[in-house]
Length: 276
Image (cartoon, rainbow, N blue to C red; front, side, top):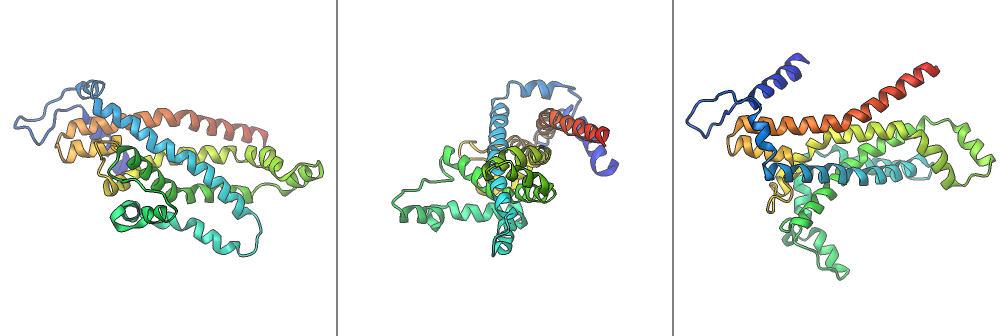
């Protein structure tokens, strides 16, 4: 923990308070919080925050919906479902860089892919990766496809632990299948859903390889997330101190978002312990 987490974090905080830039002839000096103040007037940084929110929370909504529906299907004892379970979780075995390459091929009109099938039903597909709005949509689709299996497995595993007598009692009381889902399954999935949301927000940084491969943050910066902007600032513009301030600010925002969810889980664990 000290070597892999604490020391790098301290080093990054120190860098973020310096003017270190390999593109400047002057040596680094401590500027304290100047880099953070500059971020408040950096339109590119503020825009990247908005786009990070879209590319973290946008896919998350669809992942929760599709993951829940797939978990319901997997939880049913239907013939031949064993093979479907394997198919459902295949995407999570793809590394993000491979996932990005695969979807880049599918979204490139010259290579057929998605536009070929849209054309077969009379729809003219857009230039997916060349148009700002469609490029953002393409990234969301790739992220939903890649990480929905994680959500599915979490929900499915939780459903396997639910007491069967609750469903029996609901059926005896005349509850329909949809009412059992609404009044039994969904309340029991509450804590698992919070865990899934926390993990998916924490892993929002993992979308970087997909963006790097598919769009390079373009077109016109429409898919440039905050961590991608930090990468550009540090490794292309060589502004190491400023790049450190960007990524640390982004992490601070994520922690602020995750803190209420984590507190909710801790309070739930304490109440469960008291009840036991």
